[in-house]
Image (cartoon, rainbow over all chains, first blue to last red; front, side, top):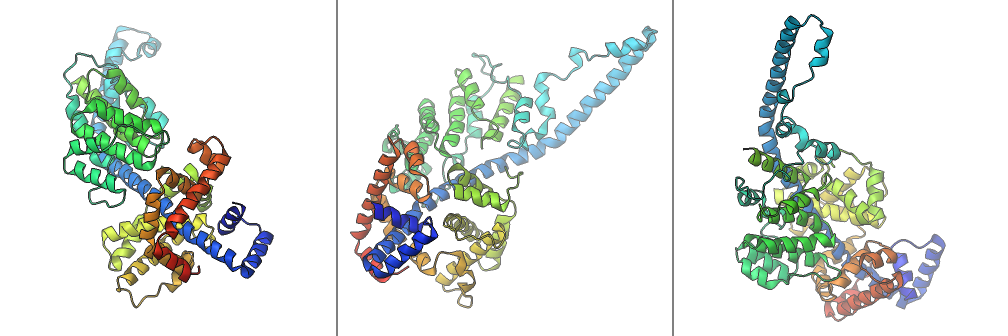
Length: 316
Length: 198
């Protein structure tokens, strides 16, 4: 084992120059040692495949994040003129009403100072809490750089306002609208992954959800691996597509509780969608799931957009 | 994320530090505005498709990560320049393998990889390595990946819930020996050992 460590330190460039010199001198005279070093070197080339595979999975996840942000951009752009017009209209209305009110007061009361004190906005003249998000279209543009501010500005009471019996909102349709397979799965045609994973992926993409459900066990080992995470993702998506939302939620929760990224973050978004399918009975769970997606979360922009949609639907 | 720029030093030290710092640095490079476009323009101007460009861009990041970790990047040029050079080298290699680039020699880019021999082994014996890795088990794979990324035994023990660094070390050794046995049991690897000197 000592020799093993010595060779590894040598190949990793962690040997001090004097020790390195001695080691190379020994290697020059010891063919057996030289062969062993060569063996280590070849093994290390092979082990790099593990690092490469992991990095490829991460790059796929980063692409998915970028794609979802891109998906949101046209909606923001389309809304911008409306927001600006609403903002301008509200400003003009406030100015006109303020001017009219001041004039009225000036004609009624001789003391002008009192007007200033009394021009505190009347509650009915202020824009309602619900309309606030509509005049802040920029909130989507910097979900990560100004997260705290954006979080503060965004509606936080949409979920709390929901009534258990409320059926005005079509939560299922909303969940379908927000559920994008690419958020959880690689694109079709991908060839990297274990055989069982690729078979599961093909079944899922062919709509054979039961096959996927039958193929993977709904559990994780004590120290879950990336491969297990991928399989659980397949399982969660299969449950979701098969209409088994409680099971989908549990599968996503297993992934999220592992803390392994990027799977856990994707799963946190999956939990939101699975709960959304179980609304309106799961208000507090939905609120908690949305709150778990903080400003630094890759699905933050999407979660915030969902909040806004929920608020809009509830206010209609 | 993309709004905050990182210096080359920060990116390099992040990759060398490993763990989440490495991941964050690589993500910033991967999503760096303009970098992908530069590579895509080059690939497409030299007979490649959009998909080729995407593949080469990803491979360039894998090679850059490895080169930095193994101390081959010496900061003689900006990191993005180095990255683009790797992508170009990789594309030249791919085209040469397809016999479509006979007029261009990759000699200019030789400093971008550990050695042409190692690169050849990586490509030619990939299936052999993958076969052995597939048989060592998921836990061994994860342990050896962390080991390869230079995590300390204490960190590995913590991440993989071993009782101590010592246990993790023994386990890493056991996994490595298992990997070696599997490789050696393959006649193609014996030939490789016999014929190759890196």
